[in-house]
Length: 149
Image (cartoon, rainbow, N blue to C red):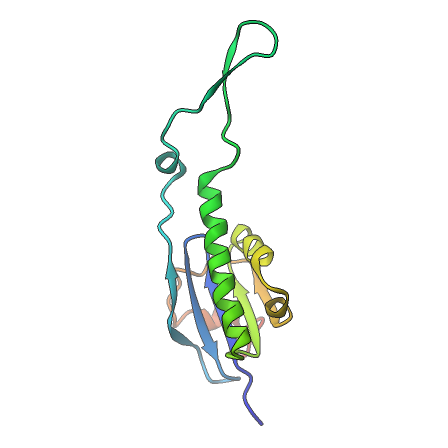
């Protein structure tokens, strides 16, 4: 019987990596070429210009206009879409049988929104945790509730 290949995506809004588990007791292995990093500077650095101004609808007052969206948030959503594309490509190539996603709640929501239906069908579990800076030797302990590493 062929072992079940599980990809584990560990990500946040700016970093991500894909690990492989090939069955119980087989441990985790980082997949080469599937480690991602995005430079997401603080919002104050992205949007350093002063906001535009508009006239009051009644009277002569003027008000600063709020930006239509948060550029920091947009970059995190774009990073989630990039990770989702990588997962979709792996799914089409049949590189994995099931998927475990580990990400903080906001990044997890961005990933859910970006995942293709065929990838969503392979999601075995989701863990709302930030383990991007956790040492590889510690990861199995965090994953034991969803995966026999």
